[in-house]
Amino acid sequence: MNPSPLLGPLAAFALILTLIPIALWLLKRSPMGRFSGAAPGGPLRLVGTLALGPHQRIVTVEVGAGEDRRWLVLGVAPAGIQTLHTLAPQPDAPDAMSNALPIFAQLLARQAPGRRAGRSSARSPDAR
Image (cartoon, rainbow, N blue to C red):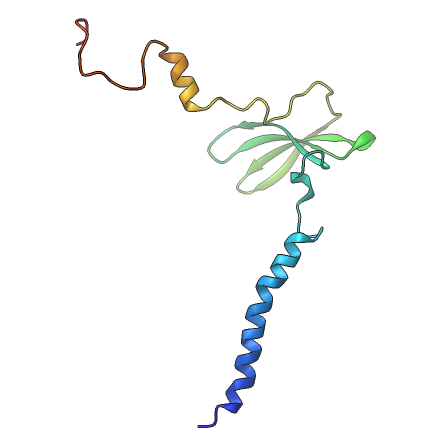
């Protein structure tokens, strides 16, 4: 069997497999491949979110810049995203990430301030 007829298609296949990661890497670093709203100060900012159920949310998003800024109140569900209302931006609204809920350990420390993290082997007389 002569290997030369298989060598051309095999080399082309290897070349294509090599070019795919290179093309994805270039796309990731180009302006087309980046989601510009994720950057701070970009044209898209999450203002607030409210969970209505396990898969339904109401999200307020600020879009645009300068005088063209608008707030969109969006309904987000597995079936899709729907615009519920459009508002003028409010100047005193905090960023959604700045009022994030405290972590579980902080909440637990507030509920039981007298308890320590480790348990002692001695039991108090009033323990049942």
